[in-house]
Each structure stands twice: as C-alpha cells, then as structure tokens.
Image (cartoon, rainbow over the protein chains, first blue to last red):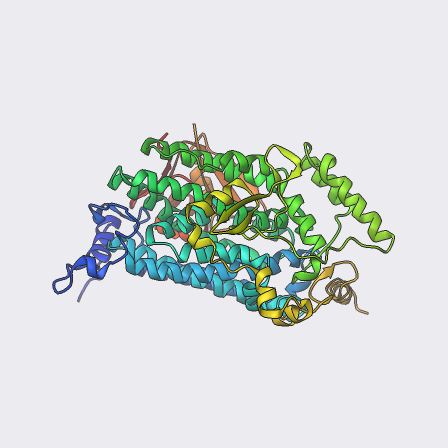
Length: 505
Length: 89
C-alpha cells in the first residue's frame, strides 16, 4: 500500500525561476530587435533583462489562487449589499457624488491601464517583466469590472450613474483622468511604467484608495470598501513593480538617469493634478470624514514619497521638480476645485452643495492657515446669494489647462489671492496652463499636447456651442443628474426610502 | 530615518498576523483606522512566517498576505520564511 507522503514543494525562489524564466526562449528566426521594436525607442539602455525580478516572486498559479480568493470575498459583500438594501446604509446621498466621480473618471482609467499593461508586457524583452505585466493587465481589467459592478447597484436607485462611458469621453472634469492615461498609453514602454507604476500606483493610488476607502467604510459603503481594498492589494504589487522598474532602469546604465528623472518630474506633476479631484472627494464629499486631504498628503505624499526619494537618491534621483509647488498647493486645492465644481454644476453628472456650518468648522480645524481666511468668506457669500434666491451659477465655460485639462482655478504657489495662468505660444497658437508644472510638460513635447482632445473646443466643433445639445450628447439630464444636492431627487428619494426602511409605515 | 509601512484589512484573518508583526517588530507603531490597520516602522519591517503560524495556529504561506494586503511602502524582499520591507537610506 502506498503511504501518503507530502510532496516536496519547491521553494519560492526555485519555483519563480522555473515558472517565469523558463517561459522565455531565445528566438532563432527573428532578431530581438524585430520582436521588441520599442525597447530602444526611448533611448533607455538595458544590458541584462534577467536582472529584473519580481520581489514578490509571484507566479501565475499562485496569482490565480489568491485572486480567486479575493473575488469570492468581494462577491460575498456585493451579494450582501444587494440583499440588505445596502444603498440605504450610506450616511447620506451626498456621498454618492464621490462615487459618481470615481466611476466616471477613475474606473475607465483602470481599463486604460489594463490595455497599457497588455501592450508593454508584449513590448518589454525580459520574461520576469512580461509575467508581472501580464498579471497587472489582468488586475486592471478586474478592477474596472468590479468597480462598475459594485456601483451599478446604486444606478438602480440614484441618478448620474447611468452613462459613465459617455461621461468619461465627453465631460470636462473626466478628461483630466482620461488625458493622463491617454498620455501614458501614447508613450513608450518605459515611460508608461513611470506614468502608471510610479506616478499612478505609488503616488496616486495610496492617496485615493487608502484614506478614501477607509472613509467609505465609515460612510456605510462596504461594497466600495471591498472593491477598493481588493484593488489596492493588487496595487501593492503594482507599486513594487513600478519601483523595481525604476531601480532596474537606473541600475542598468548611468545614461538612463536623466531620462528617468525627466519622466519622474513630468508624471509626478501630472499625477498630482489628477489628485485635485480626489482632494475634493475627501474634504467635501464624504459626509463622515476620516481624515482631511492635507492629513492624507502628509502620510502618503510627504512621509512615503519623501522616503522613496531619499531611497532613490543613491542613484542620483532628486525629488520631482514640482514637489515644493505641490506642498504649497495642499492647503488650497480641494477648496478651489470644489468652488469650481459648485459654480459649474450645470455641466456635471453629480450634485454639489454649499458646505454646512458644521462642515466649515471641520474644514477650518483641518486647514487653520487657509480656510477661514480665504474660503469660508466665499462660501458664506455664496450662501447669502442662494438664500436671496440668486444662487451663484457660472454658465460660462471654464478655460482648461492644455496639459492637465483641469479648469484654470488654482492660485500662484506663493500668493493664494492671485490666479495662476501661464501661457506659451507654439506655431502661432497660444496655449494656456494652470501652473508652471503643466507648462513645462507641454514645452517638453509640444507636438504631443497640441493634439489633446479638450472638452470645450470639442463642444464648439461637434455641437456648435449648443449647451443643450452637448448635454444630450453626454446623456446628462439637466437638473436631474446635476445641480444642487438640496432639493434633488437623490436627496428626496434617499430620505424617503430610508424612512421606509427604518419604520413600518 | 524613513518610515516603511504595511496596511492590512481589519478582519479576523489579519488579527493574528498583526499580532505577529508587533511581536517581531518592537519599534512598529500600529494605527487602527476604519476597516484597516496601518503598521509603521522606522526603516525596516520584518514579517516572519513562523511567528504568524504560532499566532494563527496553522500553517501559513506568506503569499497569503496578498489576500488582505491593502498597501505597503519600501523595497520588498520576500522568500519562504520572511517578507522584509526596507528603505536603504
């Protein structure tokens, strides 16, 4: 009789070696240059691809096992959400504004990242890199799918969720995230890794997924917490991939340093601007807040980003060019952008509102240097106008930055009373920017950014400037999907249904 | 000095893992936030399979951390016995 003997398992290093390196082969009837046409395109010098290794040493078999486990947990929560009227467990329906922005601006970015990683996984010549990129491509499409799935439960009850794909392509604030990903996907493979692996994963996602998702938990939205944390556990691998890739580029050849530094400068600033949207989500849109945007930035920007740049200093990398301007902007960006979202609320697919006195007290405690001085008086003035029946609405079109595509609403780094507007003339045309950082990005590659699709010019090209026709084109119902939260169908329905759910009337 | 950190979902599976990390890293500081636990440590954080198994009372594959991991910082070095997060400066 055979005795059952535990099979001797390979150790992690040997298993990784067999299940990645052994998947590669030496081509015999095409040259490597023909097979990997883009690896030299950006001027990066790579001498030994085998030096790149996934520090987690994750192989596809283990990957499927753990991802399946995460999916089981996720769908258990989604089922619970559907079964127990999870849409009524949130603090109040203002919270949904943050989810609408997330669905329109961030989830399509996940899908874009999936396409990008599928591509660069093919374009990189090293097998370790190919396997890690393949996993990341699958992760990213999973994130898009789980996010759309989780939020579709709200679409059954609330406005503004129904046309996120149209919103993604056609609305002004969604083009901020979209242009970030389009820019990354139109770059070479190494720059794509800096854009997504470093800027999006290392700098952005911690600030987006961690405190925001933790906040979602306090706002009663377990479906979002679950997709957020489930996605972010993949991001931990992605950040590691991004960091390994930066180290790999820098260790392969000293000539790579200036190229990598330029990309870090560019993509830090581009990432920071996308965070403008996130700052309003954290400071204004969570009815129950866990931490301010400023506090999140201290942890994940200053402390963690600072540690990263001290670590990379041994290769000659310095902190990104816009680092100091970013720090100066932290106390202003969420307030300036929320004022913008409020005044242009006709052109959005979500509700906005004037913060309550209690919310303003919280903001002034979190932003003691700026809120009472610069922003409370503005909100109080807007409140007076609303009470007088003449609410402050701006029906003009925002001037957008040619690089980040945010409206030009931010102030000078050293003077919060002065609007920052930069210009440059290229081939006889004048272009506008919200900051030195965005102008620098443009001036480095003007031929790329003059081609940017911007929502405002598109409105005139495609709809002859007819706002009503534009709204129909975006699938936006005026006053239904947007406008003030106070008095909206979302507010009314939430209160009525919650009343029904907590009583027997 | 730089801070490395790991954040895990706050649930029944991670409770013994967090205990193990605290035991192995006396300088670690544990922050409990809604739905998550973030553990900071100066320069280095070591996560040991053996300590987790002692706390958990069962065999544990370090790669199982992936299931409840939220985020981390620092350079990652993993083998069968330990996962180390470290800044080199």
